[in-house]
Amino acid sequence: MFKGKFLELELIQEKYEVVRRPAAVGALVYWCSQEKIVMVKHKRPAVNDWVWEIVAGIVEPGESLINAVEREVMEEVGLTVKSVVGLGSFYPTPGYSDEVIHLFYVEADNSKLNRNDTDEDLEPFALKIEDVWKLEHKDMKTLLSLYLSKAKGLLKNMNNG
Image 1 (cartoon, rainbow, N blue to C red):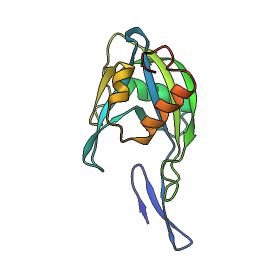
Image 2: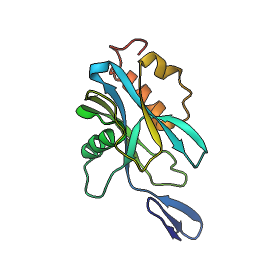
Image 3: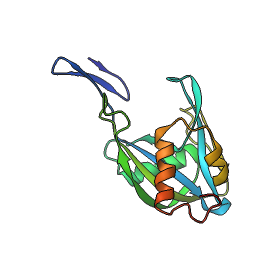
Image 4: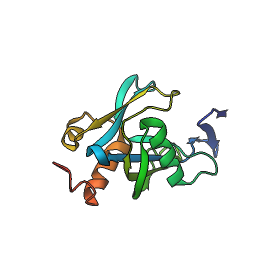
């Protein structure tokens, strides 16, 4: 029916409209030297709003999930990944899409935040964990990564984590 750069619309059994999307990764990034969580404020045209999010992106063909996480962290916030912990995977909208998002908790470092991806309208921020919990969250991958990281004890050394 339709094929775009990042999605394809398909009609199944002449009654189900299905959106086909490549797998994606999302990373809750802990900036070790600053002892802060790194979030991005991302302009999302589909909802005409700026949305607080974790670092995320599509897995390129032939790319491993870990390599995709490392690439996205460098592209969006300019940090080098030191360690990666898998949090789980989920279907954000299984009623009409086959997209799967793989979530990770990442420890990363570098001397400063730097947005290397000029194709997207986003801005990185380093925040104390207590300030992250106070943000208005509208993005499910971000909320899920925060709660899964907390449940796995990965935020235990941070205030209010």
